[in-house]
Length: 493
Image 1 (spheres, rainbow, N blue to C red):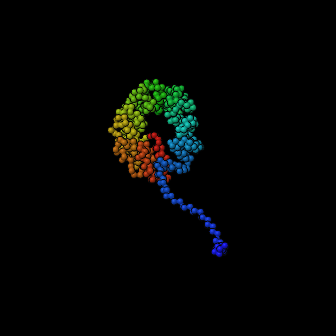
Image 2: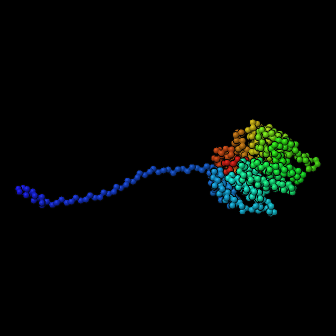
Image 3: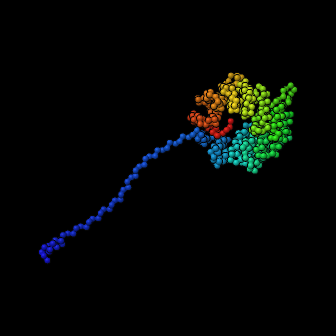
């Protein structure tokens, strides 16, 4: 081996081996990058509550102290639920209201003789029945029978009349429930006629209701029975202390007449007079009762009904016989009926309205059985719709009694009545706006006028309600809300 090769091998053997490579450090896990912050979502501005929603909230939060007031509150909320299409909630509220009404005394606690009906309780019960009828007519009609035992036949008849309006009687259960109520009414009137008791004074309302309900539900036997009782009752009215209502009973006898005989009966009543009780007295021609009869009959006759001409003649002749003496006490009832029959004889209705308003102006009291300026405005507006705008139409915004100077209380009441007339005439009289004051009026004014304004023009009235709520005190807010809410849906006058 060559010397050079040996030297090379020796050098290789003496060289220290290279150290092993150190292991790579473990790779740190990647740190997650923070996510980009989302842009803050702006909190949506809550939608302001409408006037109606604010009123309902006030009623929901109210806590009346008395059971009758709490029952009334629950029934108002039940009506709100019904209008919103929630019968389940409405039924629950009505059940709670019934539990509050039932323990209330049936006799007025302030009546020392223990005979007078507790009208607060009966009023709540009637309202409960009417609301129940919107969900369960049979239950409501059966409840009316219970209601009858707690009140008198006039209140029972009035309730039944309301329940049968628009009622579909095709259901045997509904028809039977109506018949039960009519039987109860007619039994009481038949007994009163037989015994000649003062209870017979309620016959006009009871018999007219029975006739109307029998027509709606096809209860011919009940209708015939009402006619028979009316025929027996009229002579009793004419010859006893009931003669004070004899004119009304005479009209009821006509009302109960079968449709086929109606024209003849109406034609005959034109000449009816109640003979004087004492020598030298004039007979009572029953003009105002005849005018009321026209109002009761007109909705039942169509344009082609032969009785329509006879009814128109009865209206014309009765209006022609009106006197100041009669209208002194009956101007309200006359104006109320004239508003409903204006199209029948516009010229005669116009004259009748002038006479009725003149009778009121001759008096010394603003308050009457109705708001005369408002009722007169309604008559005038309907005459206008019938094509005969009366010259006096806009003057209803300034009429007032002239018998004596008006007190501060009278001025306040007149202001409210003129405001109601202004709502009626808002589209007919430019000066109507001036009768609706811009300054904050009192609470009684607001509760009377706002519901009427709502029915006339909801969009324009809701901002006014919001303004009212900013001024009404918390103590008065519930009373205001309870009065105004029904104006959002009700057609009550």
